[in-house]
Image (cartoon, rainbow, N blue to C red):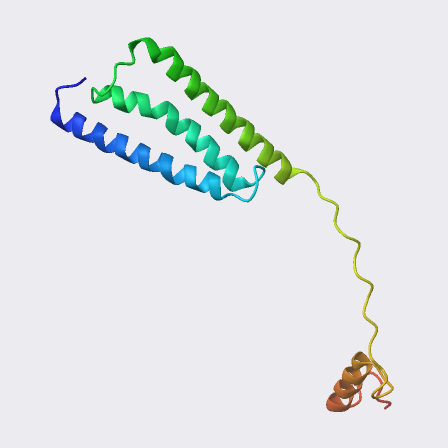
Length: 140
């Protein structure tokens, strides 16, 4: 436990923030649609991380004595980091894998029922009418 009031106040707010984060991410994990969803996996990782931080903050302000639990806190922290590495690795692998694209759609045939000619033919004919004869085709 520290005697400095500033450090004790900061650690108290840290503990409150960590406990609020635990509640928020527990709710997000419960509300997730499935265990394979991104929201659920990230929430579980952060819950493990928060569980590793609570004893440290509580010990700093003198709520508990974790003298014999230092190794346990280190193990929980290591577990959270391993889970995070696995989480990021799996998400990155699934994002980076080459996915099969569906075959391209067949080209759309122009509708010639109305005018008897395709829209491309109609546009080309209109352009020729507007420009007049080309200079190459003019005979001298």
